[in-house]
Length: 238
Image (cartoon, rainbow, N blue to C red; front, side):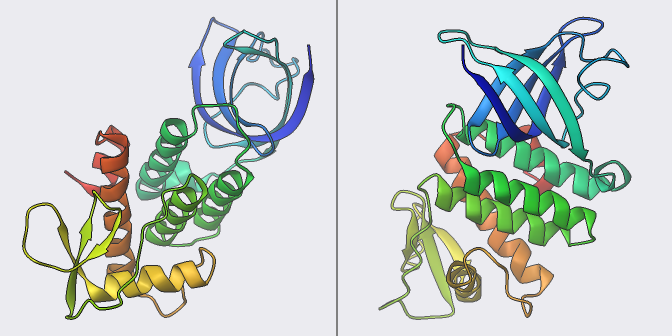
Protein backbone atom coordinates (compact mmCIF):
# COMPACT_ATOMS: atom_id res chain seq x y z
CA UNK A 1 0.00 0.00 0.00
CA UNK A 2 1.99 3.01 -1.23
CA UNK A 3 1.94 6.18 0.83
CA UNK A 4 1.79 9.47 -1.07
CA UNK A 5 2.95 12.84 0.24
CA UNK A 6 2.22 15.76 -2.06
CA UNK A 7 0.93 19.32 -2.25
CA UNK A 8 -2.75 19.55 -3.11
CA UNK A 9 -5.60 21.97 -3.71
CA UNK A 10 -9.05 21.02 -2.45
CA UNK A 11 -11.58 21.34 -5.28
CA UNK A 12 -14.56 19.61 -3.66
CA UNK A 13 -15.62 18.10 -0.35
CA UNK A 14 -18.58 16.32 1.20
CA UNK A 15 -19.44 15.55 4.81
CA UNK A 16 -19.09 11.79 5.30
CA UNK A 17 -20.16 11.89 8.92
CA UNK A 18 -20.21 14.38 11.78
CA UNK A 19 -16.42 14.25 12.06
CA UNK A 20 -15.24 12.85 8.69
CA UNK A 21 -15.07 14.20 5.14
CA UNK A 22 -14.80 12.90 1.60
CA UNK A 23 -12.73 15.20 -0.61
CA UNK A 24 -11.53 15.66 -4.17
CA UNK A 25 -8.00 16.99 -4.36
CA UNK A 26 -5.82 18.07 -7.25
CA UNK A 27 -2.31 16.93 -6.36
CA UNK A 28 0.71 18.61 -7.88
CA UNK A 29 2.55 15.42 -8.83
CA UNK A 30 -0.20 12.77 -8.76
CA UNK A 31 -3.25 14.38 -10.38
CA UNK A 32 -6.79 13.97 -9.10
CA UNK A 33 -7.45 12.02 -5.93
CA UNK A 34 -10.65 11.26 -4.08
CA UNK A 35 -10.15 10.33 -0.47
CA UNK A 36 -11.75 9.75 2.90
CA UNK A 37 -10.46 11.73 5.86
CA UNK A 38 -11.72 10.07 9.03
CA UNK A 39 -11.91 12.46 11.94
CA UNK A 40 -11.03 15.43 9.74
CA UNK A 41 -13.27 17.82 11.67
CA UNK A 42 -11.81 17.05 15.07
CA UNK A 43 -9.97 20.10 16.36
CA UNK A 44 -6.97 18.15 17.61
CA UNK A 45 -6.77 15.74 14.68
CA UNK A 46 -4.25 15.51 11.85
CA UNK A 47 -6.21 17.62 9.34
CA UNK A 48 -5.80 21.25 10.46
CA UNK A 49 -9.45 21.34 11.48
CA UNK A 50 -10.79 19.88 8.24
CA UNK A 51 -10.79 20.55 4.52
CA UNK A 52 -12.14 23.77 3.02
CA UNK A 53 -12.65 24.45 -0.65
CA UNK A 54 -9.91 26.22 -2.58
CA UNK A 55 -7.23 25.74 0.06
CA UNK A 56 -3.70 24.51 -0.54
CA UNK A 57 -2.03 22.05 1.77
CA UNK A 58 0.26 19.06 2.10
CA UNK A 59 -1.55 15.73 2.01
CA UNK A 60 -0.45 12.30 3.16
CA UNK A 61 -2.54 9.45 1.75
CA UNK A 62 -2.54 5.69 1.56
CA UNK A 63 -3.61 4.40 -1.86
CA UNK A 64 -4.91 0.85 -2.07
CA UNK A 65 -5.13 -0.70 -5.56
CA UNK A 66 -8.72 -1.17 -6.68
CA UNK A 67 -10.14 1.20 -4.07
CA UNK A 68 -12.09 4.23 -5.27
CA UNK A 69 -11.18 6.29 -2.21
CA UNK A 70 -7.71 6.80 -0.83
CA UNK A 71 -7.26 6.89 2.93
CA UNK A 72 -6.14 10.38 3.91
CA UNK A 73 -4.03 10.43 7.04
CA UNK A 74 -2.69 14.00 7.26
CA UNK A 75 -3.53 17.44 5.89
CA UNK A 76 -1.31 20.39 6.71
CA UNK A 77 -2.89 23.66 5.66
CA UNK A 78 -0.45 25.89 3.76
CA UNK A 79 -2.53 28.62 2.12
CA UNK A 80 -6.06 30.01 2.05
CA UNK A 81 -7.66 32.55 -0.27
CA UNK A 82 -9.97 34.83 1.76
CA UNK A 83 -10.88 36.90 -1.31
CA UNK A 84 -13.06 34.02 -2.47
CA UNK A 85 -15.32 34.66 0.53
CA UNK A 86 -15.26 38.45 0.24
CA UNK A 87 -15.86 38.73 -3.51
CA UNK A 88 -18.83 37.08 -5.21
CA UNK A 89 -17.13 37.43 -8.60
CA UNK A 90 -13.95 35.73 -7.39
CA UNK A 91 -16.01 32.99 -5.75
CA UNK A 92 -17.92 32.29 -8.97
CA UNK A 93 -14.66 32.18 -10.92
CA UNK A 94 -13.08 29.74 -8.45
CA UNK A 95 -16.13 27.46 -8.65
CA UNK A 96 -15.82 27.46 -12.43
CA UNK A 97 -12.11 26.64 -12.35
CA UNK A 98 -12.68 23.81 -9.88
CA UNK A 99 -15.53 22.48 -12.00
CA UNK A 100 -13.27 22.38 -15.07
CA UNK A 101 -10.62 20.51 -13.10
CA UNK A 102 -13.14 17.91 -11.98
CA UNK A 103 -14.54 17.39 -15.47
CA UNK A 104 -11.30 17.29 -17.44
CA UNK A 105 -9.06 15.49 -14.95
CA UNK A 106 -10.97 12.43 -13.81
CA UNK A 107 -8.06 9.99 -13.84
CA UNK A 108 -5.20 9.94 -11.29
CA UNK A 109 -2.63 11.11 -13.83
CA UNK A 110 -0.09 13.86 -13.11
CA UNK A 111 -1.02 17.29 -14.43
CA UNK A 112 1.50 19.62 -12.77
CA UNK A 113 0.90 22.35 -15.37
CA UNK A 114 -2.81 22.50 -14.57
CA UNK A 115 -2.08 22.35 -10.84
CA UNK A 116 0.25 25.33 -11.18
CA UNK A 117 -2.24 27.17 -13.38
CA UNK A 118 -4.97 26.73 -10.76
CA UNK A 119 -2.68 27.89 -7.97
CA UNK A 120 -1.52 30.90 -10.00
CA UNK A 121 -5.12 31.95 -10.70
CA UNK A 122 -6.17 31.61 -7.05
CA UNK A 123 -3.11 33.51 -5.87
CA UNK A 124 -3.65 36.12 -8.56
CA UNK A 125 -7.22 36.82 -7.44
CA UNK A 126 -6.06 36.96 -3.83
CA UNK A 127 -3.45 39.56 -4.84
CA UNK A 128 -6.08 41.70 -6.59
CA UNK A 129 -5.84 40.45 -10.15
CA UNK A 130 -8.98 40.91 -12.21
CA UNK A 131 -11.23 37.86 -12.18
CA UNK A 132 -11.40 38.00 -15.97
CA UNK A 133 -7.62 37.71 -16.27
CA UNK A 134 -7.40 34.83 -13.82
CA UNK A 135 -10.20 32.96 -15.58
CA UNK A 136 -8.83 33.39 -19.10
CA UNK A 137 -5.31 32.40 -18.07
CA UNK A 138 -6.49 29.22 -16.39
CA UNK A 139 -8.76 28.16 -19.24
CA UNK A 140 -5.97 28.59 -21.78
CA UNK A 141 -3.39 26.70 -19.74
CA UNK A 142 -5.81 23.87 -18.92
CA UNK A 143 -6.90 23.39 -22.53
CA UNK A 144 -3.28 23.30 -23.69
CA UNK A 145 -2.33 20.84 -20.95
CA UNK A 146 -5.11 18.36 -21.75
CA UNK A 147 -4.54 18.49 -25.50
CA UNK A 148 -7.29 20.86 -26.64
CA UNK A 149 -5.28 23.94 -27.55
CA UNK A 150 -7.39 25.87 -30.11
CA UNK A 151 -5.95 26.19 -33.61
CA UNK A 152 -5.38 29.91 -34.21
CA UNK A 153 -3.86 30.08 -37.69
CA UNK A 154 -5.14 33.23 -39.43
CA UNK A 155 -3.12 32.77 -42.61
CA UNK A 156 -5.31 33.30 -45.66
CA UNK A 157 -8.29 34.49 -43.61
CA UNK A 158 -9.21 38.11 -44.32
CA UNK A 159 -11.40 40.63 -42.54
CA UNK A 160 -11.93 42.08 -39.08
CA UNK A 161 -14.38 39.28 -38.31
CA UNK A 162 -13.44 35.61 -38.49
CA UNK A 163 -15.07 32.49 -37.09
CA UNK A 164 -14.31 29.60 -34.77
CA UNK A 165 -15.34 26.09 -35.73
CA UNK A 166 -16.07 23.83 -32.74
CA UNK A 167 -15.90 20.84 -35.07
CA UNK A 168 -12.33 21.52 -36.16
CA UNK A 169 -11.30 23.30 -32.98
CA UNK A 170 -9.90 26.32 -34.73
CA UNK A 171 -10.27 29.57 -36.61
CA UNK A 172 -11.98 29.46 -40.00
CA UNK A 173 -13.41 31.93 -42.51
CA UNK A 174 -16.61 33.66 -41.46
CA UNK A 175 -19.13 32.41 -44.00
CA UNK A 176 -22.17 33.02 -41.82
CA UNK A 177 -22.84 29.28 -41.64
CA UNK A 178 -24.40 27.86 -38.49
CA UNK A 179 -21.55 25.45 -37.84
CA UNK A 180 -19.20 28.21 -36.68
CA UNK A 181 -19.16 31.12 -34.24
CA UNK A 182 -18.43 34.65 -35.36
CA UNK A 183 -15.40 36.08 -33.56
CA UNK A 184 -13.55 39.38 -33.71
CA UNK A 185 -10.12 39.08 -35.25
CA UNK A 186 -8.72 41.01 -32.30
CA UNK A 187 -9.95 38.24 -29.98
CA UNK A 188 -7.94 35.68 -31.92
CA UNK A 189 -4.95 38.05 -31.98
CA UNK A 190 -5.08 38.23 -28.18
CA UNK A 191 -5.13 34.43 -27.85
CA UNK A 192 -2.16 34.21 -30.21
CA UNK A 193 -0.25 36.63 -27.98
CA UNK A 194 -1.16 34.58 -24.90
CA UNK A 195 0.10 31.47 -26.65
CA UNK A 196 3.35 33.21 -27.60
CA UNK A 197 3.77 34.32 -23.96
CA UNK A 198 3.20 30.78 -22.65
CA UNK A 199 -0.14 31.51 -21.03
CA UNK A 200 0.49 35.06 -19.84
CA UNK A 201 -1.94 37.82 -20.81
CA UNK A 202 -0.11 40.87 -22.20
CA UNK A 203 -0.31 44.00 -20.07
CA UNK A 204 -1.90 46.05 -22.84
CA UNK A 205 -4.98 43.79 -23.08
CA UNK A 206 -8.16 45.51 -21.87
CA UNK A 207 -10.90 43.79 -19.87
CA UNK A 208 -13.52 43.71 -22.68
CA UNK A 209 -11.03 41.93 -24.96
CA UNK A 210 -10.06 39.54 -22.19
CA UNK A 211 -13.71 38.80 -21.46
CA UNK A 212 -14.45 38.05 -25.13
CA UNK A 213 -11.49 35.67 -25.33
CA UNK A 214 -12.54 33.98 -22.09
CA UNK A 215 -16.10 33.51 -23.35
CA UNK A 216 -14.79 31.95 -26.55
CA UNK A 217 -12.74 29.42 -24.60
CA UNK A 218 -15.71 28.73 -22.32
CA UNK A 219 -17.90 28.04 -25.36
CA UNK A 220 -15.21 25.72 -26.75
CA UNK A 221 -15.03 23.99 -23.37
CA UNK A 222 -18.81 23.57 -23.33
CA UNK A 223 -18.65 21.85 -26.71
CA UNK A 224 -15.83 19.55 -25.59
CA UNK A 225 -17.65 18.50 -22.43
CA UNK A 226 -21.09 18.37 -24.00
CA UNK A 227 -22.64 20.29 -21.12
CA UNK A 228 -23.04 23.82 -19.83
CA UNK A 229 -22.31 23.44 -16.14
CA UNK A 230 -23.96 25.51 -13.42
CA UNK A 231 -20.66 27.26 -12.52
CA UNK A 232 -20.16 28.17 -16.19
CA UNK A 233 -23.67 29.58 -16.45
CA UNK A 234 -23.29 31.58 -13.24
CA UNK A 235 -19.99 33.07 -14.38
CA UNK A 236 -20.76 33.81 -18.02
CA UNK A 237 -24.56 33.72 -18.21
CA UNK A 238 -26.58 31.47 -20.49
